[in-house]
Image (cartoon, rainbow, N blue to C red):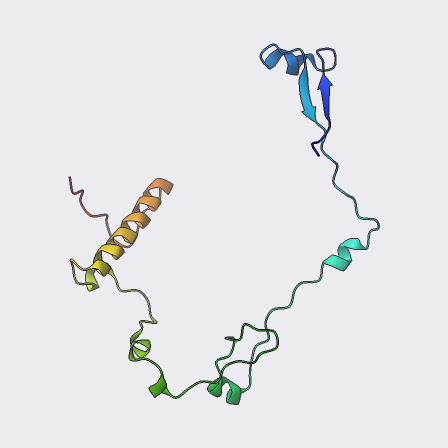
Length: 142
């Protein structure tokens, strides 16, 4: 249901009516006021912070299970398998910092993706009025 409207005439607010295209009647929405708590202690009841996930500290469990991978309330963390059961590409993943532009072979897809990302960073820094520290933007193609 829509909020009830009340009509203001020039008698009640002549400045508003004269500024709005010379209108005589202006509609104003009457929205409901915010609810006030019933008693002062209501804020204290809702101030409890939610608890985060429990952190595993047992070294035996940390070396035999993938802690934090369980998404179910009643389940348990999955056990780790031997290294031979995992694919080879898993051990070749780069877990360190991303390669810099001069370390990547020019002309590859990875090179152009990194070039585009650094150009976006440089443009954002230029618009904010900051100096970009990685490198100067490349010369224009045109």
